[in-house]
Image (cartoon, rainbow, N blue to C red):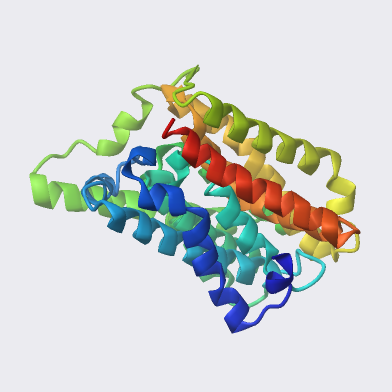
Length: 327
């Protein structure tokens, strides 16, 4: 199976869509396996609520959105030389991770926000270029802000943006101002639109701190939650213990960009403070960096049969966790 995705050709890229449909087949075909996507953001809640009434259409739409995100991930990591070779494993890994639990498969706030977060990363990694620096920093801030408005815990990424840009390139006062101007713009625009449409002057964004504090853990789906938490825990362990292998034979710019993904993982911990309860759906905040780490794991395995076995096990586990909801 992995052989199909070792080449960056258009046909191979398009194969990711039927792959995503197949690995999500249980939830798509059986209504009893579906779990509504989590809604947790100032923007997009009405749209997400409406998608929850679409039936099969919601999961077809979310699958197509994940396919688009996978394509962006492949282009991003290949363009930034973060793989060591050209293949489609990161996008494949992202699709695989987003099918490991039924709560990942529907339309949710974090799924929408991951799209804008990927766009922000594109601009952020372009900071190393010499041209259009002002626009790049402004747009990086803009898309990180939109991510926070779509999914509230991503609000903490305002600090991630500053730290990541300083890791990539030395920041000056004007650079920080340009970034913060871009970050504040969506909030100001959203506030003005709210005043025009509702006549209310109090920003909705103030409610994001209503449940700020230490969250409670939620184990709502038993075995499926335990399985996916175990897999994510193993990937986290690999990413930490295998750091030297992950950055090996990468140029200095690629190493800095990989370090920003580690910074993104670090910021997932303060994200929990915005949540009243956290469960399996929250794990999706890790999938963008973990798609690279899982891809590198599959690539670093010397024996193709072992890599195929790892992929097959994860594929079967994804189907199994969906089936378990039906039991």
